Amino acid sequence: METLNYIINDIEPFDISAKIKDVQTVFNQLTYSHVPVEKDGHYIGCVSENDAYCFDNKKLLSDFQYALEPFHVLEDTNWLDILEAFALNNSNIMPVLGVDNKYLGYYELGDIMSLFNNTPFLNETGGIIVVEKGIQDYSFSEVCQIVESNGTRIFGVFISKIENDTVQVTLKVGHTALNSIVQTFRRYNYNVISHHEEDKFLEDLKERSEYLDKYLNI
Image 1 (cartoon, rainbow, N blue to C red):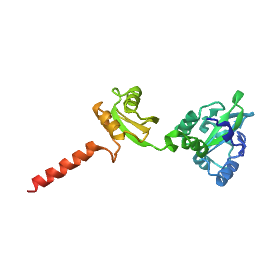
Image 2 (image 1 turned 45 degrees about the vertical axis):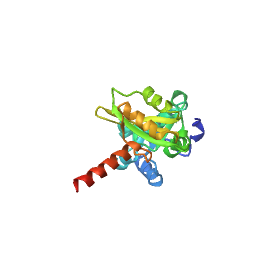
Image 3 (image 1 turned 180 degrees about the vertical axis):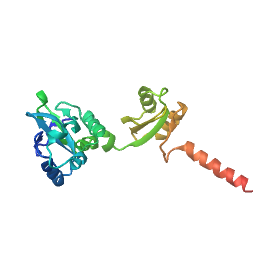
Image 4 (image 1 turned 60 degrees about the horizontal axis):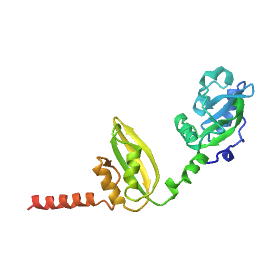
């Protein structure tokens, strides 16, 4: 996906010689978590809003250069890697650099998220299936084979959670054969986390539970 069209240039990077007071004033006017900083015309990092308000406003940015966060992406970085950079750095802006660390502008988190919203994973109609299995026992090829062997298309699949030795996988699939897919996952020893109206296995368990309750209450 093309991301360069989303580069914004309405914030000039602060020079490292700027006054902390001026940085704080800008943060008072913005909703951004960070602002970029340059030295000798080259990007050297971002100062966070939290840090800026903790600094002595009588001093300069150069007095706190150690606190700058050097995160950034390049102009040819894939949009998924950009999204990951946002998550890793807990920021809502992401500086974009060109050749020789030249600052080109920044991405806003909302704009990059909109690219994800336009993927088939979100905008195609289908069903969500969440399964889990031991981290050493699952494979993407097996997960995809289970879905496709039931004649259903996959719109997306990703690891949504890792905890201890268990991995959780979330899939977006076509509406057809959902019950068959769920049952196939169980035959392959996957634990199905998501709930499905079509799940006959759970319906049978519910019926048996209700029968047992009636029997015990006789």
